[in-house]
Every structure is written in structure tokens, then in C-alpha cells.
Length: 198
Image 1 (cartoon, rainbow, N blue to C red):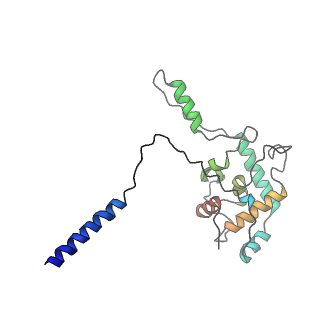
Image 2 (cartoon, rainbow, N blue to C red):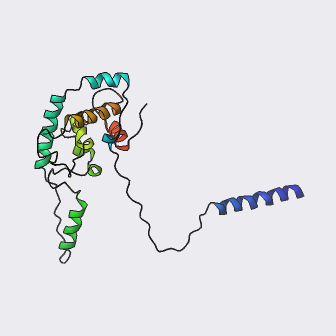
Image 3 (cartoon, rainbow, N blue to C red):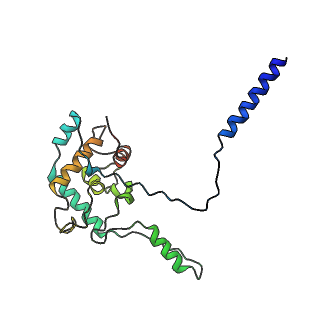
């Protein structure tokens, strides 16, 4: 009986000690530390090794069709306006709420009207609404605009150089895991995260 009580007491003490270890000690500190946001992955900064099947699909890439589709999407983007919903506000708060609504709207480049890469949503990129991304739709996200270039990409056609189109196509076919020559939302998420495939 004495052995059982001793075992029970030891087990209870150990349980309490372990429970106390799981609680982190909180020091009083009024300083708020804000972590820097993680930069969006840049698919143009990496070289891609394509599988044999992906390389075959990549070899069939039609640069002329790509440029035509991409140019049409870029023209559409130049003409877009963000919708900021006007909501009637109580008197005295109009300016404050209007400023908040503007700050909640993703910023666009002044020349190209493109959203920043991290603000590009699936619905923004899926220009034709078919639920998948073509190479041209993917390139809207993949090919950055360089504001320091002698002439910004959006000022002269083609909007993307042959080198940029080829690099975008390489990364596109790398992430096209199912081989249907489109990116699903899951495949695009892998690209956006810079995941290694295979």
C-alpha cells in the first residue's frame, strides 16, 4: 500500500511539474515588435530544371500566341479602375473613412496600372474567368515591371521581352504538375510559394 501511495505521489508531482513547464513565462514589455512581411517569391530569379514531359510541353510554347494574349490582358489592365464601395458615413467621419477605404485598396503602379505582385489575387490573374491560368495570365504575376528601366515594360510593345516570356514559360511548365498546360489554383499556390517540385 505504501508503495502505491509513493508511486501515486511521484506521478502527481511529475504531472504538475510537466504542466508548469508548458507555460511560457511572460515578461512585462510594452514594446511591440512587428515582423517584416515576407517578400513575395520571384519566379524570375530562379533557373528551372524541367522534367522530360514538362520540357516537351515547353518546347510547344507558342511565343506569338503568348504575346497576343498577354498584350490583350495588359491593355485591359491599363483601363481598369479599382472599385471602392461608397458607404454612407455618419457626419464627422467622412474623411477618415474615405482615407481608410483608399488605404485598403491595393496600390497600382502609376504607369502600368498593375497591382503589386503580392496584391494579385487569383481572380485578378484569371483574366478570362475559366478557373485556370494560361502562360499569359501567369506572366502577369511572374514578370515584374522595372520602374528603373530606360522605358518601362508597359510603354512599348512587346510588354515583355523574349527573355522574360521564356523565363515565365519555364517556371510555368515547372509548376504545371498535371501537364494540362494550365495552372490550377493549387499549382499556382506552389509557384507563389516557390515550392520545389519533384
